Image (cartoon, rainbow, N blue to C red; front, side, top):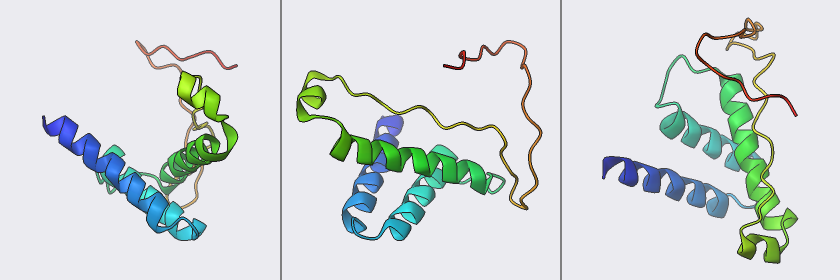
Length: 114
């Protein structure tokens, strides 16, 4: 029940950001970044701004894709061509220093690159 309430609140905040700031790209992006920091990254003070920006860009892209890119018939048939997940290579820390690339992590399988 708690997860359902949190997820609903999370999605409601996205709805608010896209409605309230429909004509203000900068403010909408800031709101989306804040939503991600709050609900996805659990207000982690050590989260990287670069990561938040990449995730916010992904959310914005999916929104624009659904609203303007996907034909209505595809939407109603459930054939939505979702965009690729963000590339987290060459990330920078909050001081602008490039982070060490992640190598193989034992026990974690990576999807092959397209």
